[in-house]
Length: 241
Image (spheres, rainbow, N blue to C red):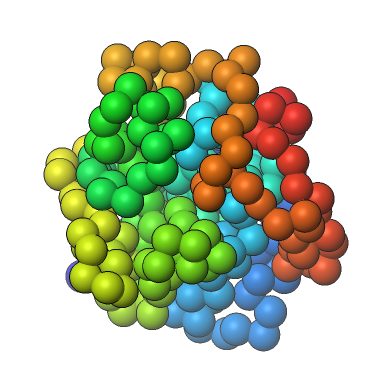
């Protein structure tokens, strides 16, 4: 059990919880949920599935990491998705902070491995640390349900009582995600440190001029419907910049 500081409910540069888009998304996702547990579960599911996971959308533009921009883009990699989940939780009055870990993804497309310089190590994988009924829980909303189906991995589910982290194995027993190193938790996004580590590890991947790749991660349905009922067309991350 842990008392959550007031700072974990406040707006920050990246957690723009008072932005109309963030407030609207949170309210629509919560619906008639009344408890923090129910609200957190619905917010997690909405962020997981309504923002497409795209590892090729890494950007060095700070504006692209604000929660409101993530909603506008409709696709993001794990760090901006964690920012969005943390922001909508705070918007709903649920204390939340950002957490990071280095993970090794044993399921990876050839195109993504090439873009990452041949490694399967993902540094600064982002997740949300959410305080539900006095207990801090880790929840990663990165992989949307449809993407999980493509790779034969069950989607991560959050029950408001236990950590919701990436599965170690796929449905057929193949090794999937391995947590290597914890990077800690933060009140706001430590973007400068993240970008420095990404450049040191991957080099050209952190390049807003990089061409999008057509593979299982990047290929998105023609349209998606947001929690407010609005339809969003598919687009590459560069088109949103």
